[in-house]
Image 1 (cartoon, helix red, strand yellow):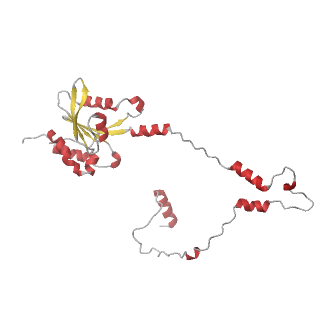
Image 2 (cartoon, one colour):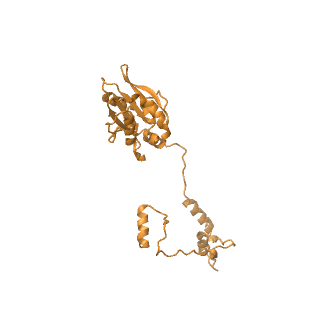
Length: 266
């Protein structure tokens, strides 16, 4: 490839430094440059600033019979003129110690945004923190969990994605997230069917079960209130991404969900 074309190709890919792994058979042999002549022990002479050089060249020379500008009453010397020009052209910077409330508010609003994956099965509602940027096979992990619970026909490849706050609605007008997700759980649960809520992840667990101690590796149990003494049993579990990245969490997860296992008799 031509060198100019190669440089354009690397610039388009955003690569600034490139080192080939293999040396091509017809590639030229690199030559080490001798830089010893460029190094000198003697200190280099520092040239005078251009402003001073130009000033020395443009200073008026006294001519016999003619008064110079320095001899005229009220006239300023060249040094005084240069000093005054430097004072006028010197940039002034203003520093402010006041905090940026708009920046803080923007950061807080960005932190309050999150997404949740929702699956609904017979007698089971699963809500999990959604981290699509990690690109982990969480759907397959949930499928294996359901198979271990005796649910071999449940599909997990197309979860419903819930975003908070609702798209196009500011946080200040959205109200509490508990009300939003509570209404969804109430609408999805069948009154005549016993339903258990599985919360995978710290974010959704803190929203639905604030009384349960929640962290990235915590397993706990609680109940989600729907009002009028109506509750849904809930199990708090680590996020699906955490379980994939740390398989040591699987025994605790299995111990918590094992009572939900359906036994089929052939």
